[in-house]
Length: 353
Image (cartoon, rainbow, N blue to C red; front, side, top):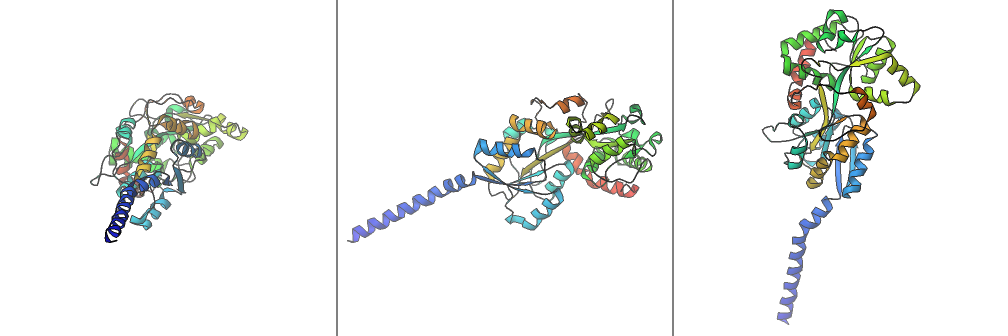
């Protein structure tokens, strides 16, 4: 009887041990089925991107979508208990700030490092956190064809010259798109020269900075502004639109690639990384690697009019093709982000609202 009890006890222990040993496999299987995505991308066309990932992997994506500031505040309040697995943001300055705030986890992926160019990903900080750029956009100059000679606005520097007094429109200097452009200028020209440029821009404003990039394009078409800055995908949206009102806008404006004879046109990115406390780590890395795949890169190009970060990917977007080839600025995106604090202080000094 005693032997039978011992055998039952040993059998129970064996079963318990087997269950414990199987637990990591069960947790891994559970982990691989979902992903919590915190995204500042709110483009309707990204729906196809996410559903394609789920179709390919079986991993369900739970999304929290908000602007970058709201996501940052949420991540700070959640702290180590945050359920975020992946964080996506849409500007170099914002990605750099998220890295400095400690939101990203250090990861190593030979696939990502082979696909994403070095200038489009972070340089490791002391804690090694990493992020990657997955798509690019350019900062273009648009001008009113009836009022402005394109030769007078074919560099960022010329926008600040006296010949363009009363013609220039931009969005707020505090906006990350502007901070990234100025951060790039600081990197290649130095802070003193960039501050002089910013003073000239303030003196040349047709109106106080306001509105988004599409508002700047519309103001140029109406004649309220002679020239403005815009991210390329806003212009491509109008070029691809079949709406009569959009085509009317397009008919009145021209665009130029700035600085083609010198440093090249400023490039920015959308990108992301694995959240510091990601509960589904394997799925998070798998998702980032998916974003660097040919199929995902084509979604960025064809869905939201962005250029793929992976240079070997061919695009079929007619709007992007209409823009034609151009010389791009070759500056580390991480360096541009790093300069954003100096950029904001500079703008404050010159009164660039």
